[in-house]
Amino acid sequence: MDKSNKGDAQEIDQIKAIRNELECLKLNYDFLVSKLEASSANSSHHIDSLQKENQVLKDKLEKLSSEHVTLQGTHMDLEKSYEKLVESHAFLEVAHEVMVTMVKSYEPPTHTCTSS
Image (cartoon, rainbow, N blue to C red; front, side):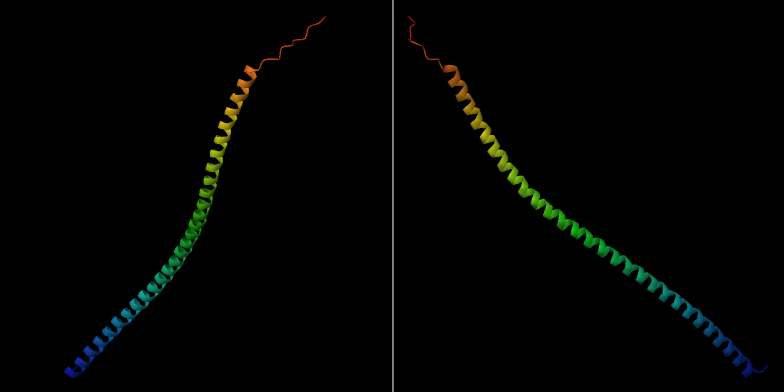
């Protein structure tokens, strides 16, 4: 083998090694792209899931807030009703005391009729 053929063989071996390395790099690239796509799809699914859960929680918060406002109104109505009830009870106690006093102080009329 002369020098020219030896150099050509070395160049061919180098080209083959570069091609093999290129094939490995292409396989790694394809693998990484597929992994990225899977990760992206998974992330997208996860984001969609979180957004749905967030919307459900927002709806629950809105419902609870509305119920809270309604309950506050009911509470205020009950407080007013209670105050009126206490007031009525006080009037009834006074009326009862007046009636008890009147009954205790009542004297039956004396008859001045005499029988013959």
